[in-house]
Image (tube, rainbow, N blue to C red):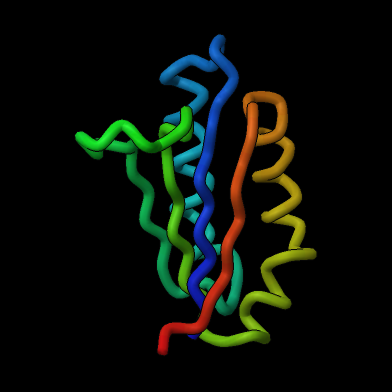
Length: 99
């Protein structure tokens, strides 16, 4: 199992509609791409104020390394990036295998 974490900072003029469209694309990946077994999405609600402008997170779970290898060049991932990049200010991507 591989976890794929995205911390997202959107451009200031990004609308809620655009964010909701992106969320729907992310959550649909479990039905479109073999090896993507889970997607969680959420907005920051930490009271600590240490999010440095990152407002949303996506946690994707891949079945294994071949699932991730299938997702990264997949046409559905490319379509998602086409919606994502124009509204993206910054992103942190972090993958790990749970211990």
